[in-house]
Length: 471
Image 1 (tube, rainbow, N blue to C red):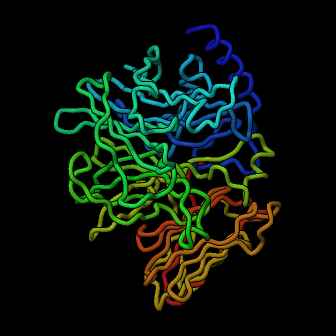
Image 2 (spheres, rainbow, N blue to C red):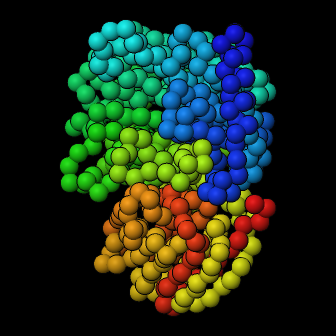
């Protein structure tokens, strides 16, 4: 530990003493103790304990220099904050411990991340000049204490056609070798992903480039590669998509391609599918637990968004949260998401009715609407957030859309759905996640109610509302 690390530790501890209860603090979702949270990092299960690291800026509610905060859990529902794990305390990460992953092997946790450096003395565009994206490794034998940092690769070690934007490593093992995929922006402003290859997890060399037939955005962040059932999936958060299809979407997108063939040799990428069609979803990361489940957690936020925000949370000294952990699974060739099953052990049936249900003063709840007839569904949460199915389209929208209202400035998101069979709504103090047709389509949003209420109308359907124990 150097002097800078000791000073940062002290400053963070002092800042975290300011953590308050706050009216809009979440009960189920991971949040920063204070300040700012963004991307999930280093997700894994290590010695039967789940670890979730996160991009953390404790000193500034609107972001700033990033470090890694650290949560642990034994059941994915009850989390314990374990402090800051990694600080920006080296020349190769002095402007931020950026996003990365965990790889677990032989009783050791390997944490790979991007060390961010921005040069200040010069006329830089920070795309082709003035920025470093260094690949760094830290290890841990117990999940709580961490080794010295090892600089593995610098920008000059990457292919020469890449800009300074190379980041967000994700590592896996296949056929006896180790592979790392990173998101890149080429010098021609095209988003792609670069694979690196290693025999020992320490020494890496460039391998295959992953790209679409036509340019698709200018930067692919947070790449991920996973197998779900019989489908191979390449996930990326894409910046710079233009055209009519994206006009009513978020400023940046998070989605996946189905991979035909092998990503490491001959492959074809399908069309791009969004993970989530709501307002607040970015930078998801997956991991596989000891039972073989693929768990996906995303940032319930959106970078560089000027249209809407989280003013009420920021006024309490914090901003952003993670999505609730989701199981990702394949059914009939499609990808589905659902809240992890551990949540079921904490649910308690509050009320069950047919056709219609209205409840007041529940800020944390789950609603399940099943056996929907004739696609008939309309719901209103907190009197201002509408969920409805109409004309083969599911819509999530706010009836008041200014930044000082429940919506924080959010407007409408929509998705064509041929038939609506069931709806699950997971509501927390300041967030809503909606799962359609068993999780084939998902919408997520933050919101800031004046009063909490749930009103569901679905003629002929079975409607159940659950409270969540232990919160």
